[in-house]
Image (cartoon, rainbow, N blue to C red; front, side):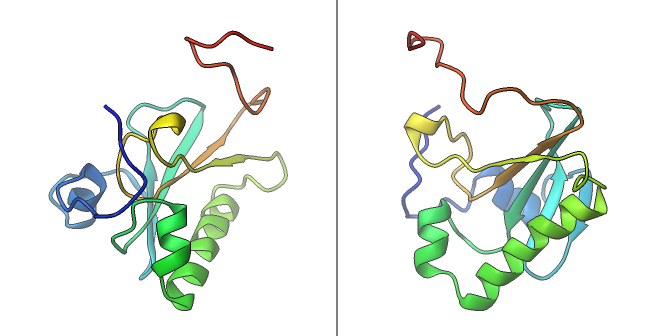
Length: 132
């Protein structure tokens, strides 16, 4: 499924439904700005998603239209989750996909937080692209 990182926002997306309590999640953290929960298909021993509570499709959408308080609250929430999980010393990786070329699957801004092992190189070639 290809997802655009551009508005309009789709209120039926899975993260919107999680925020409304229609779908359960394994919550890690929640405040007025963000919700963090375990990914249902983890790609590392620790794989947590952090999502803002507002209706934003991507980081570009969020940075252009969110209030200063929403931006600060969301960024602080990501840091709080990393600290809460004890990841600062061993390290972690943040990833936010936007649009079809990045393989964004849910049209709601979300940051993946990966940790729990050595993560290797930043980017791997796409299956249909040769490595350089």
